[in-house]
Image (cartoon, rainbow, N blue to C red; front, side, top):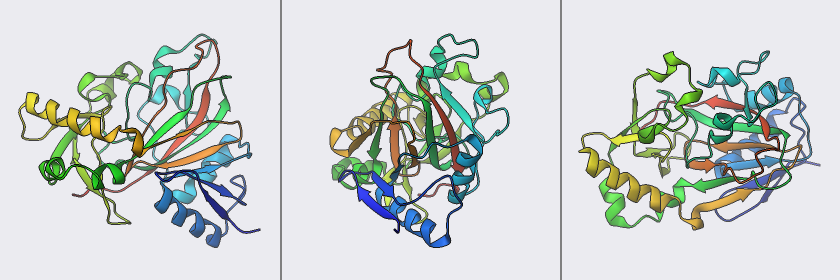
Length: 280
């Protein structure tokens, strides 16, 4: 049986059937995956438990892996992998770990000079309720945006850093990483493969619009973020053990609401794939 792609929503998201992520992929198989990824932005592979090395090998099909800035969560044998976890090594609740990615919509590593192409996530332990991940299509957000707002933001640039203008989750960073300078990316980004434009600023990691007074910048960003988080752009994934997800960071937001019992484990393997320099 060949690779089959099943659309999960009209906004974004598809399930890939007939492919085993634990095994090396044929070129034709990955061509099908790459085409589906460009179209659907989030891909789900089900019922395939993976070891860390298998997970890393599968992720490399998408490109060069990019180590995450939060060194305290890195896998001891595979530094390109980090744990997404709400549990400390002694078994106690890790509040900082649980809140990473839960506080606001974002795209991963947008605060890097060369931000991520995509992220892959694979669960090792899940709570018995809650803990889903939500995604939002930023192509649609831009393309359906009121023309007056779209005209205001075209051609603008913004500053990004980990935690954004609110300084969220910076306690998980090493001291050296807290002092990394802000980076500048377009407010509206052109996708390097499809040529489509999407909203690239995000609530978690954007600091300010370049060249604007802070009050004006905050008002504009709030307007963009309110529009981008509308339900008609969203799809939600309910996790199962054996799932592997890969999602776009160049044209989609995501977040993982902290709506699950804090006394239950939620642990994932995660890695990101390096992208390219952003362009207007």
